[in-house]
Length: 114
Length: 113
Image (cartoon, rainbow over all chains, first blue to last red; front, side, top):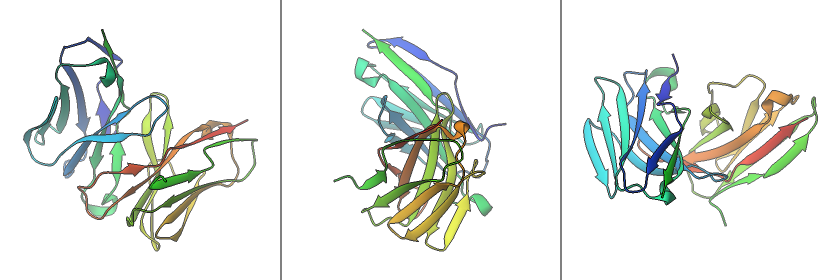
């Protein structure tokens, strides 16, 4: 089982719709969770971080975390063509020999069409 | 100037050659990371370092070695490059603790023929 898995893509949504990106992780003691956005040919950039169960909203982005289910998601409301990118879920290991290790999922390609 | 600088940005080499990718940062962060990116596989961790004397293997360290020459410098070496090491390599830095974000360099595209 991969440590961090994202829903298979690519994902295509119309402009103005809600895009839903999902991620599961295997390490139960993980404590920090991140969503990065990567435009083609560019470096990843952080768009959301979440550390406790529940929802965290920032503008059109909402991150949701459920530690019991080992699940983290990202919702993008009112999707815009400029949101078209690869979205990467990252999980920080908290204990033992993996302390400080930041593991990424395989990424989900999102396309928002006009 | 970029906070995290990678050199070279692009490199084409032949099988069996030794290659070094260099990373330097001006953010003053303790932690530095090397990842490789392949289509459909996301970012996979090669090595990470918490300080000059603390270096840890990641998911895919075989065939790679690293050197943390100073707090600001972290180099990745391929002792004998092979074609399946053709990829985009990213260096990243992070402040102490587990809540901080990674700051990435612009990437080094390596092609091994």
